[in-house]
Image (cartoon, rainbow, N blue to C red; front, side, top):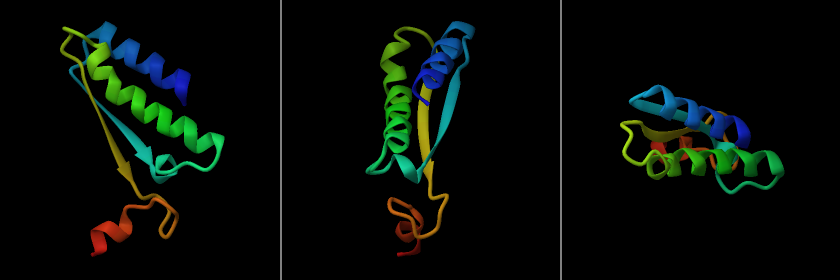
Length: 81
């Protein structure tokens, strides 16, 4: 998750991609294991990619979706209230 995110950020900047939307999961919300921590790190890399891009046109954003209903960190309860 970490190295792949950085490779993608570099490639998008190098190729002049204008907009990049990274899809995250609820695993990155309050991670309890290494897998969740790498997902969170990936999210943070994409967000910091905006500063890293400097004067290039590439802009990065991250959206998180609740992929497992009822799991810890899921956004589904947020939208139901």
